[in-house]
Amino acid sequence: MAEEFEDPRLAAVYDPLDPDRSDLLVYAAIAAELGARSVLDVGCGTGTFALMLAARGLEVTGVDPAEASLAVARAKPGAERVRWIHGDARALPPMAVDLATMTANVAQAIAEPDDWSATLDEVRRALRPGGRLVFETRVPARRAWLAWNRADSYRVADVEGVGRIEQWFDLLDVSGPLVTSRGTWVFAADGAVLTSQLTLRFREREEVERDLDAHGYALDEVRDAPDRPGREYVFLARVR
Image: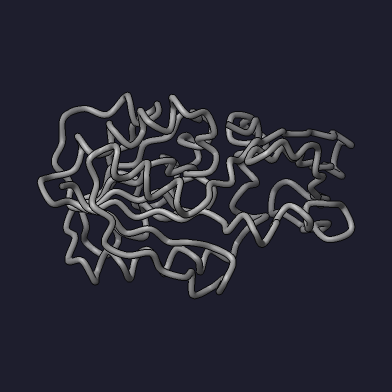
């Protein structure tokens, strides 16, 4: 997990620095398409998607290992509508939800094989019979990491109550399917420079399909991400 999600100062500016979360509308539409009434948001972060669903009347549980991110989520309007759990999927209590989601980088950030296997197992146990799992992962062949450099990722924003922040990302290492990058944030108000390192696993489609089958899921469909055509797989699976 990246330190940015654990550092209270970075967690507090995560949303203002990435305000366009239209990618989450895809998942909200899938929840509606599947008729889900209860949703488990794995890796819920600062709670944007969980709160979006709760505002639409769904019963939502958000789980995340970063307490700093959950603190931001719990402070948002409507947070009382969501059940927040600190931990990874292994911290989940017994439940039987209609749908589990892993949006954005969540699935890829579970980089260790043992952690990935445990996540698939625990999420399956949290789903009702026939319940669905939906998540995305980048297409490795598109090599998204080529844009992880200061020239391509630099941006600056004025955050209310915080001031001017510069942000960029640098590629540190590519070792097979594991890609490590470092984020840098510069706070103009006091000159603080904070960094955070993140390793993502770029799984091939066939690998993900094998993993789902091995952990008790039937793959219904692999879709293209409408907001990033040709760059991501969106997997829709159900409990066998």
